[in-house]
Image (cartoon, rainbow, N blue to C red; front, side, top):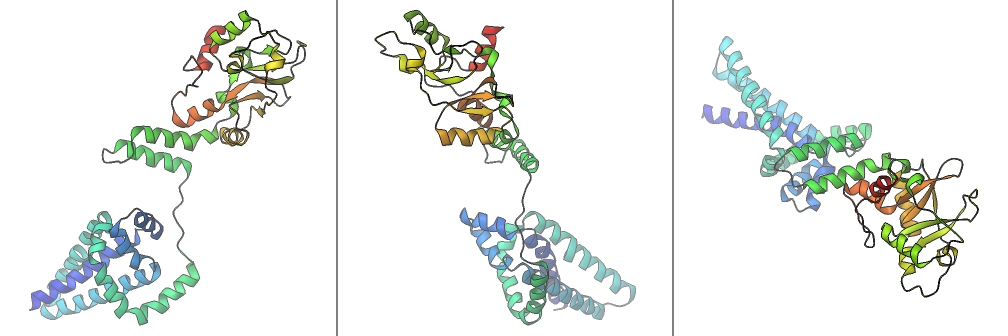
Length: 330
């Protein structure tokens, strides 16, 4: 009988100690996310974890009570120094160290199996624990969700990439990394510089030879400027697909579409993406602080920073237009 009582008290001591560390390490917001994904274990644990301070006070008070009873009981069946050694060893090793080590690793799995025991003690100790929990709630406020910085999220992604059990695929990790970092890059970092961009003049005649050249270059859009070589004002954009079926020779200005958008080279890519979506255009002219045209940037340039792969326009003949343009100039 003595052994049975000792085992029962040690079990309760281990339970309170282990659950105190294990359950309190499971944030209510994280449990709620798991619940939304259909995790039944999280649903069971959330029932007690949502009242964090009440759970904490119950587990601590229960642990103190059980350890006190265990110490007194062991002292009654043993004597002297032996009682101190046995009591200290059993409570420290079996009641604290081992259960905390186990529950810290398997908190959700084991916690969901014994949560009913916690609910019983929360009911029994409610008159004592509730007032203390109420004071803690008023003093400390509600638990806040854990928020991660960009760098912390990047580190988490790296940990997933190094773990064979991760459910995140390599291409998904690449996209996630791109989405986290592309907002830190400016237009200047991804634009095609003016020196390698083909500009057309308003009065240029779309002869058969010019049309052929434009198609052979492999680009889908060409910026159009005023006729004066000293006038850098852009008046529109020529779409190569608009040249299909052109029966009579016209000037570039007659065929070019007037809608054109300028964007500053210092703007960030996330702002540029929002502008692309708002204007429903695919190519912007990039200007500097003096309103001088310094290059062009396409929506593909922006999306490539997120996806980490080249995006090819359905009408383009080249995979990387910036590389092609730079190669031609070189």
